[in-house]
Length: 271
Ligand SMILES: NC(=O)c1ccc[n+]([C@@H]2O[C@H](COP(=O)([O-])OP(=O)(O)OC[C@H]3O[C@@H](n4cnc5c(N)ncnc54)[C@H](OP(=O)(O)O)[C@@H]3O)[C@@H](O)[C@H]2O)c1
Image 1 (tube, helix red, strand yellow):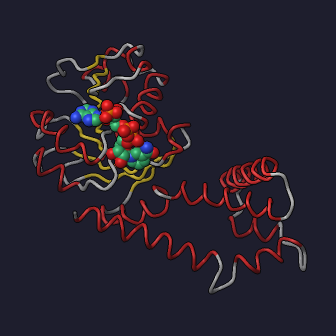
Image 2 (image 1 turned 60 degrees about the vertical axis):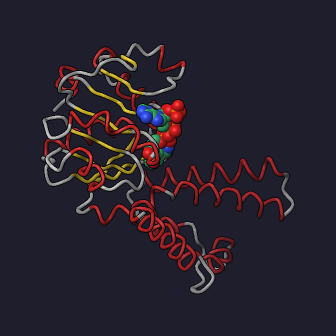
C-alpha cells in the first residue's frame, strides 16, 4: 500500500495528542490529502481544527488504516468504537506503550491485521526511532504500510518477535530520559568545576547532541570514535577510567538501568 492507496480508502487516527499530531503533521507534509484522514479525539487541539481533516465524524466503511495513539489506560473506552472495523481489510497500527497484540486481538478479533509499534519522544522533531512487529494476520505488505506511515516521525526497525518489545522499551522507548539525565548531570558536574550554570548546560547539551549526530553519521563504530579521541594519559582517558570502571561505571549502571525498565515493561504488560 502506498500513500495513494491510503488516501483512496482513508486513514482513521484514534487519539491526536503529542504522538498522533506529530505523525499527522508528517503525513500531511508528505502529501497525504487532509480530506482522507478522520480523527477521533474528545478535545481536538486548535492545530488539529485548522488541519482540514475530518474530526469526530462518521468513519469510512473500510479505511486502509486505523492508527491508535491514545494512552494505554484509555484503550478500554476508545477501542470498542472501532470493533466493527476488525477482522477485515483494515490494518490496525498501535503506538500505545505496553499494550500487547493479544489485548487488541481480544477486542478486535484475531483475524484483524495488526502492527504493534514502539516509538520514542524525539518523534516530536521527526528524529524518533520506532520498532514494529506484526500479528500472525499482518502481511509483509501490511508491515511495509506501517513502516511508511511511522517513518514520518523518524527511523523504523522491525522485530522478529513481540517478546523483544520489552527490551526495546528499555533501550529506545525509555532511553531519551536516560540521555536527558546524562545532560543534567554533565552540566551539574561542569558547575561543580566552577563553570556558570547556563554555560555548563549549553556545553552539555551541544556535546551530547553533537556526539550523537557524529555517532550516527560516522562510518566508524562508537567504540572506535571513543578510541580516536582518547590520547594516552590525556584528559579523556582520565575520565573514561572512571566511567568504564567494571563495578561502578557505565557498563554496570546501564545494564541494570535497562534491565529495570525491561522488567517493568514485562510487569506492566501482565497487569
Ligand atoms: N509521546 C511519546 O513519545 C510516546 C512514546 C512511545 C509510545 N507512546 C504512546 O503513544 C500513545 C499516545 O501518547 P501521547 O504522548 O501522544 O499522549 P497524549 O498526548 O495524551 O495523546 C492522547 C490523545 O488521545 C486522546 N483521547 C483520550 N481518550 C480518547 C478516546 N476515548 N477516543 C479518542 N481519543 C482519545 C486524548 O485526548 P485528551 O487530551 O482530551 O484526553 C489525547 O489527545 C500512548 O499510548 C503512548 O503510550 C508515546
